[in-house]
Image 1 (cartoon, rainbow, N blue to C red):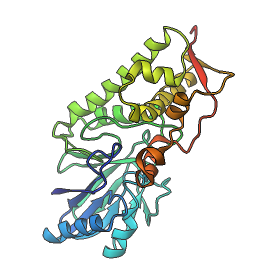
Image 2: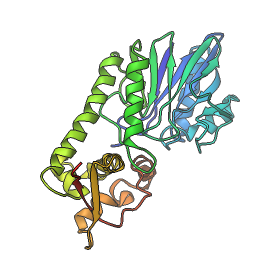
Image 3: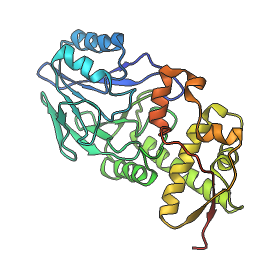
Length: 305
């Protein structure tokens, strides 16, 4: 009933590529979820898969508007005449708003639409009861973890979304994530994601117990210095935790009256086009929220409370 069509856009952020899905909804109609980046041959591949299964693409739905998930939607819509559905707050071009906490009906299928903020604020997760399957976009991947990067993402809403999936969808058995392989034990994967976020926060608090530190110092202390290409992603992840903890009054931030070192500047404001090329830089900028430049270095410390 569900067919994976993987986009040819592998990278450090997209893993083996963006996962697009065709859902056989009955009556010869199909739903296309996350058509992916604007690559003509990928759009053609989605159409071929539908045709091979005797299906007409009747609707297109986006989990969120990031450039590795959404831009092919208008291309596929132009070829099929199918309307594009997205979160009401999505800036991605779409024809119809999804009914949050309601249903998306295509053919004989009714997918539940779950408002799922955290990775982005225009993110949804779809649940297909007949398959006991969650389509999680970048909330949960088939392997690894996702980046939660301000200002487009926030840690506490993301953790709340994960807890909702664990509590309200305890019957789910499959996760169709936005990247990586299909997950056949949904409950174990959701629990793994919840535990991972708790672990990272505990590591951060333990690090600050040793004294005030900057984000670059926390990145090197917690993640190590052997994967410099991932330091910018790690830095934004630390920032998401720190913002949450500061809002809760558990830490305080003090600006430092000194310029950043070259390494600190590279971690906080990476020259993405130089590192990965302009083709992949747009995706990474969206994932890392790195259009937000960090020009002031802060030292973070635990509060007495």
